[in-house]
Amino acid sequence: MEAHRMKRVIACIFHPPAGTSEAERLVDAGRRAAARDLISTLRKAGLEPILVASSAPDEARSNGASDIEVLDTGGGSPFHFGETLQDLIQRRGPDGLLYFGSGSGLLLSQARIEQLRRFASEDGPAALFNNFYSCDFAAVSKATCLLEVDLPRADNPLGFALADAGVPCSTLERSAETQFDIDTPTDLLILNTSDRGGPAIRSFLGRLDADHPFLPHILALLTDRSAHVHLVGRLSPRAWADAENEIACRTSGSIEGRGMRAGTNAHVPFLQQTLREDGARAFFRRLSLACDGAVIDTRPLLASGGQLPEASVRFASDLLRPDLVTDPSWRSFTEAALDAPIPILLGGHSAVSGGLYLLAEACWKGRDLDRRLHPEPFDPDKERS
Image (cartoon, rainbow, N blue to C red; front, side):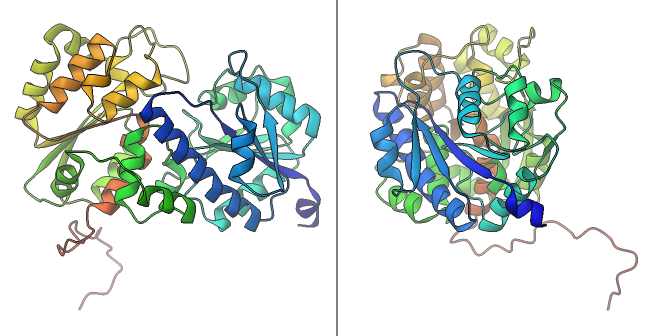
């Protein structure tokens, strides 16, 4: 235990550059509020120093107190996550490292942060991920091992890079705390329906001037025993099973594109092929015959050759604003979703991951229906009256 206390573990939060559209600025502001709450929890857990890597250092400094160290990543060349992380480790020489994307970790407790710190204090090289297949945050022991690895340009495939280099990797149990990440406007809207988050993000959400025409309807469906909700996208079977234990409706799902940002894939997702052949309006017409509402991670469906359009296009689609969607295929899909006979919630990966956990909690706010909607597993040793 003494060795653990002597190890030097640093925490770093990487904040991506903000776009210029209204939706991008909204997500950027939400991430900065989330980072303020994360910084507060890191401080309480005794992490020092706390570094923020940002191409807007003045804004990053305004996010924390004087004890926050800001690493200016610059804005002149494309950002490279791996090179920036290695430069940080080379200059700081920590024993262990806690890495966070600025939209992640906002729901973590002090106890969970302390657990991550203990992991990062171990002697040998190892990594602990919130999601091995698409990293949002991670703890790494013997952080200098990262200097010997060909690290990726973005954080999502970090788990694959370390595993391929022989670093032992493990993952945290899936939950809202470990999986929720602010990556799209939909994530902010989902978080706003819950009571989760620290004072900074709750204050931000209290001033949020954005809504979704169908989100209240989706929440109502989740508590309706007679309803059927379909889930589409990078859906984890574990997250799906966990959500089903908390909601009342029946569910079905189409799992498409898992790991799409973590590695190459020569295959075209099945639903993407169907969408291209039939068109968006036929897609939603058929979907409406199969369910009463749907939560859709659009990225696997609409990626062209594995590539996504700029965030302004994706985020405007999430907000069901086809007038602001400049990409023709994304605009036609958004228009069809807006006109669909059933309520549709569009978003990114978190909508069917961490967001799904929050939806399963938030749907019961203000509703009196008994939450115990599923029978207890049979225990033959349990005494029954």
